[in-house]
Image 1 (cartoon, rainbow, N blue to C red):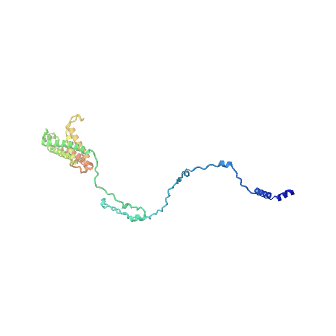
Image 2 (cartoon, rainbow, N blue to C red):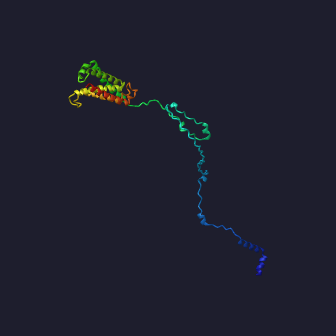
Image 3 (cartoon, rainbow, N blue to C red):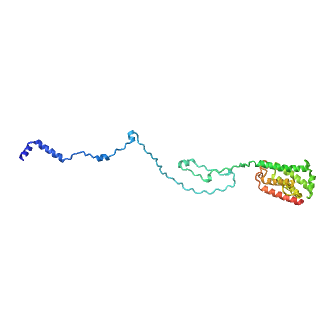
Length: 296
């Protein structure tokens, strides 16, 4: 023991080494620790294509939300008194529209409300609307020419005795069954001429058609009374058939009117007869009945 202690005391280097050894043993030494499990769990970070290429990443731009605007409500206006009714329908007497000042709309920024009374009135046009009726006017013209021509020619032949007609004397002998045969022959012939002329011209058509219906109806009844054969069309007398057809067509023209190709084209009964048709139809029926029973 003494030798060892003496040797340590005698060797200063050994004493210093022992102190350094104990100092290192007592101090914390940083020793690297390798954890293979942690390195395995660590995953590589994903590559950013924008960073690798040096381009800027696109940004999403959202639309700006509109700011709420305060709406000012205008106070309710007091009701205006109702305007007096305008009796005249002429658009010249209509009230003019009230103009809204531009300065008021520019300063307030509000849309002006125009009242209904200030709205622009509708201008009524006085132009008559022409109704398209196709070939109706031309068809009525042909019908008038046929019926009016037969009545006109028959009356003229009887009055002036030409074209194989015996004249008034022959007609008077046919009418001997009636009273005042001479006056009746002249009146019926003159009526046929007047009715035929008016129907051809389309002038005073309701009057002319009524006269033609009376004349043709009287002759149809006269020849029918004298006929003693059958009443079927194949056995009926041709005189009865002709005068009956003329009377029926004359009444039909009363209800259709003469059409636009006539002198009555500006009158109401030219295309749409109503009151005049029924009036003259009743007059024609009454005149035929009166003439037949008074001369029977």
